[in-house]
Structures are given as structure tokens and as C-alpha cells.
Image 1 (tube, rainbow, N blue to C red):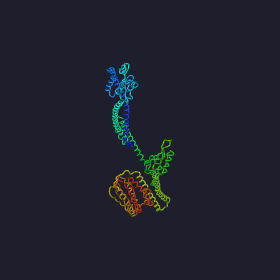
Image 2: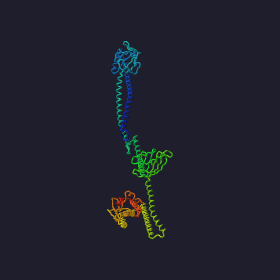
Image 3: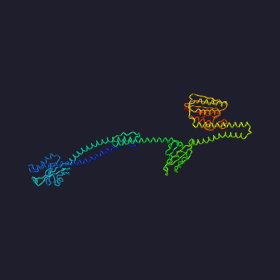
Image 4: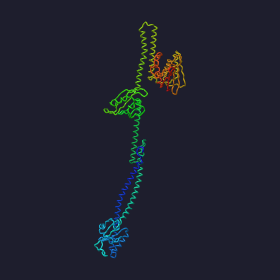
Length: 603
């Protein structure tokens, strides 16, 4: 098979050769048949003309013999004259016939044995050359008869009278005409077939040359590499090659532009955060991007020409699309999609029919917006507002109660009044701490830490440990710092990092047993700096570890408030570390203490 899938080019070569050979042979046969007829006519006319000339020569000899009377006044002189001429014209038969049709002299037969010739065709058609079968010699002969005037009729040995004529007949075997004509035509046919052989050779060479150029054209057309066709010339094949080269160049340029546009469209379509699905009228998928596959949990298989109901298990999506196709109206809906892992996504679906206004749509385009994060943030905001309201309401309510009790009782003992005022002050401090932590959290989340400067993480950890040692000594808790290795300089916000480390050490002090130890360790791991803060407290249950970095989340709410915690410390730590492109994690076993690890990449 050829590259284009068609028959091999050699078949075309043989087709051209067969056609050319057939044409040459047919032309040769037609020319041979036509030439043979012309040759036969020409050769016969020539033989007849020669026979007529020879007959006139014989007639002249006979006429001279009659005039000379050959000296004896009998037919003997005519016989001798005929014999002499017959010697000069071998293969010719000479017959002399009197006016009554009787043969008086014949060069090959006895005149007395021959019948009357008066009604023979050649005698009745003087001067014409005729062909007929001779019963005398038993073969086909050519005859020509010429009348020669004579004297008195030759009766009883006397010469013919003047009023009579003598018919001179010259005959030639017809087979000699066929033999000479066959030799002539064979020679002509030989030359004709020699010319045909030369023509066939030219056809073969020309066929291979032409089909070779055609094969170059077919190979070039079948190629996809865009190389130019190497067929040159000013004939039709050269014109075709030039035209194909020009069109190939134009098509290659056009295909390049189309591929660039297609790649650009694919990149845009594939990088869209919104999921897009294009369906036909039957609900079969024609086009789908990666975001739609992810949102609809369709898996990794090929989705083209598959029904939407087969591609996704979300019944709400299928119903919404069916409504859009059935009603030819835009459908908006918020649906929930359950993934295989059990996670739930909230998706805003827009299904818009495709087609001319007022006509039945041929399909629809489905656009999917992922609202999961937005809904999560909205829930977090609601929870945050509720938590903030609760955290602020508690100290405010307590302060109001204490102050109202003091204002309502002028006779309140000084000791009780002092205790109430002290509790009001403590709640005021708690309220101030909550507001302070909220401001710190807002500052970190708002991106105010963008002006980084070079700092040493060791100094940050040692400074925080030194600042909190007095607090730890009240409960006989030792704070130790350990630095392993070197290279702890990095670009960062020193205030934010100190807040994060201080919160971790402060939490470790609060939740440690009396007379225990809090350890702060700084190490280097590749391109990261690690800060580990460990305590010997009760630890954190496994099911609580995922949520401890949420705002206002407490493992033990009562103890946290007793220790003065606001519920925002670990959230501040997390956001401060994330502002440095780092991460914070916890390792803890209930009853055996906890270790918080800050991993900071060296920027």
C-alpha cells in the first residue's frame, strides 16, 4: 500500500504501459490493414499496367510479323514470332485468336486442342486486364487482349484478309501476383512492426518517466511533513507541483495559526476555575474541562459521547440539565456533590440552551462554580461572629453585673466592693486581651508583614523564652532552649514570629504540670528552619488535634478561661507562620505532653 492508503504507484505505471502498448499495437494493426488494401490496389494496378504494356509489345511484334508475313504466308511465322517473345517474357502465356474466336497460335498449348474463345471475357473486353480461372491450365490467370488488324483470313494456309482482326492475348499466372504482393507487403509490414517496436520502447521509457514524476507528486501529497515537491518543469505536472507547493505552504501557515489558536483555547479552557460542560440535544457530552471533571467527580475515563447521567452520580445536576434542555430555558441551581471520599462540595450550576432564539436548541452549556470555599468562609465568619460575640459578652456581662451591684448597694462592705471591682478589672483585662489578639490576628491576615528584614531565629526563640521565664518560675517550670547546628538567618517579620513563638511557649507553660520543663529547640533541616516547643502536660486527644488551630476553639474551655486564654493564640501562630510560607503542626499523646513544630523555609 502507498502512504496515502491507495494502490501502489507501480500499478499506475503498468496501467500507462498497457494503455500505451495497446494503443501502439492497435494503431499498427489498423495501419497495416489500411496499408495492405492500398498496397494490394497499388500493386495490382501496377501489375495490370505492366501486363497491358507487355501485351502491346507482343501485339507490336505480332503486327510486325504479319506485315513481314515471315516469308512463308502461313501461321508458322506467327508461331516463331510468339516463341521468340515468350522467351523474352518468361512466365507469360501468349495466345493468338482469330476474329471468329479460334486459337491459331499458343505459346504453351496446341492450338488444335483448344476450344473457341469468342465468348471469353477477356476477348469481349478488349484492352482490359481480367482475372479468371483457366480450364486449360487449371489455375487462375490474368488476361489482357489487344486486337491487331490483319489482311485476308488465314484459311487453308492463306493469310487473313484485310477486313479481319487478330486478337493477341497475353496471360500471366495470378499466383505470381499474390507471391510478389505478399513479399512486398511482408517487407512493408516488417518496417511497420519495427516502427511499432520503437514506439513501444518510447512508450515504456515515457511511461516510467511520466509515472516517476507522478509518483513524486503522490508521495509528496501523502507526506505530512510539509516538504516541497521536487517536480520541476513548465508542463502540466510542473504546474501541479508548483500549485501544490504554494497551497501546502499556505495550508501549513493556516494550520499553524489554527494550532496556535487551538492550543490557546485549550490552555484557557483547561485552566478555567469554572467547570464547563457542553452537551448535545440527547444529553451526551461533547466537551468537558478538567474543572468540571473534578467538580462532578467523573473519574479519569474518556467522557466524550457519554451521557451525563453515566458520567456523574449527582442526580441534581442531571435534573437541572434535563430541565434546561426540555424547556429551552436557562436553569440556575445550587447543588451539592458528594465525592467518593465522602467530602461534600457546594456548586452553583448554570445550564444555558444553545441555539437560535425562538428555535429548538441543539444542546446546552453547563457552567459550574465551586462555592464550597465561599460557603465554608461564610460559615467560619458566622462562627467567628458568634464566638467573638460570646467571648466579648461573657466579660462584659460579668463587668456589668459587678458594677451594677456596687452602684445599687451604697452600704456594701468595702471588702466585698473591692472583690467585685477586682473581678471587674480582671474581666476588663480579659476583654482587652481578646481585643489585642483580634487586632494581632487581623494585622497578620491583612498582609501587614510584607516588609521582611533579615533576622536570626535563635535570637527570636531565646528572647521569647527569657521574657516568659518569670511567669514559668511561679509554677516552678523550667524553660530551656537548645540550638543544634548553624545558619538560622532568614528574611521575616520579627514581631510576628516572636508573637507566634511566645504564644507556643506561653501555652506550654499554661498546660504543663508544676515543676516540669518546657523545651524550645531550633534546628536546621535542609532549606528549612525548625522550631520545636515541647511540654510535659496532659497532651491533646487525637480527635481534637485537627481543630486546635481554629479561632476560639478550646480543648478544655473552662480551664482555658481560668488560665486567661482567649482561644486565639494558636490561630495567631498558624497565620503568622503561613505569612512566612511555613507550616505548623502538632504531635501529641494524651497524658504525655505535646510538641508543636514550626517549619520555616529560608527565603
